[in-house]
Amino acid sequence: MKKIIFLAALMLPVLGLAQDKTTNLWTGLSLSKSITKKISLEADAQWRLTNNLKTAGAYIGELGFAYKFNKHLEVSGYYRFISRRKYDKGDQEWVYKPYHRFYANLNYDRKIGFLKFDYRLRYQNQFKDDNGNFENDKSYLRNKLEVAYPNKTKFTPAISADLFYRMGEKFDELRYKAEVNYKINKKHTLSAGGFISHEFDKATTNNLTLLLTYKVKF
Figure 1: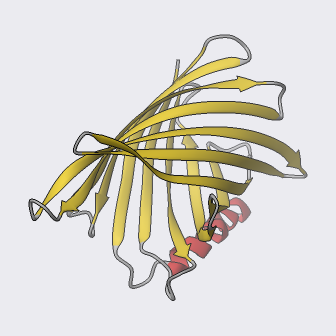
Figure 2 (figure 1 turned 45 degrees about the vertical axis):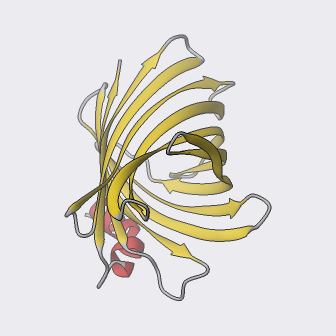
């Protein structure tokens, strides 16, 4: 019973902020393969629904690798292709436009007591392909701190905060997330949760985005 109460308490910060918000859904499949004890490859596919799950907002494909220095420190790099729904003012219609994102992560984790802390530093740079013109779009430095509760059950809950700094400009977003990983077996995991982003230029908190990902390790 104590574990159930703890799981619910971790989800409350996001669920409490989700009242009277438009709901989105990010759902996808994540595949990972260990090449050596230190090197692994990962491929992800994602489908994003917006406008109360009525509109396909984006389709995403991603490929990357990770190198583990030791049990606490890891670096990784990824390429992401995004087909995002945008309004074309010239044609006066909604179309899907391609974006290319490159990002690198530095992760450090440490277990303190019964909680696991994970800090991630990310640099990301995005380019947009607008009618054949490959242009730089946005660059961000992101700091994320996650606190998870590993335990003897198949459920591992976690909460996190992700701070976005737009390079050369300002801090413009803070993302609050709560999720639970359910370990089906050694190779299969189901992750479910949600997040709300607070954009500093806006007076109100953004809409709720639900998360659902199926993870497979080979």
